[in-house]
Length: 236
Image (cartoon, rainbow, N blue to C red; front, side):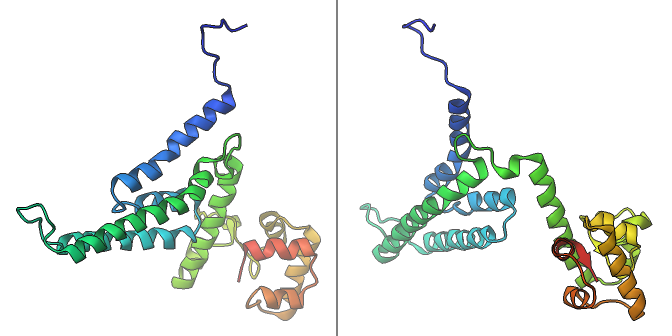
């Protein structure tokens, strides 16, 4: 039993909650202390941690707001000897703009801070190693698709969608359904071998390849789960 004169120890959940609050509090401290000039920094941090494209426009918007505040400050003449502003209008606009940026940023940062550092008693999904690996692989697949679009000649050289060739490039788990053998399609796309055999048989029968997923689905009868997995991993 804890003696009356000693403070009770904080439970693990309470300590974790306090640590997370302190960890995320710098979002608000930096925004307020810089008068909105550095409000973009927490948004860029959140965009990087969460890996969500929707956060990036906010970060860019607050970057522009910071530049706007700097320009206003540069345009405002220095104070007069009597302590009054050299340009009351610009000074007023600058002050109101800074307050507006700080208030709006803090409101939007509330939800972002919870997502990045987690709500009390909840482990954020991105802190789970399995979730982090899955999100990382998904981002890698998207990056590789963009690379193929820009530099189609690299596809064969890097062996994109063909892990069986052993070219060493990490494409995040893509599968080239137009050239990969049955067992590789089944393994990488995580589909039944029967579906993979139907894909190979279909492309052999047509004597060519499919242009996109829609054409493949129209040509080959696949199970719903196979279609879902292939939409995530197939390249053509």
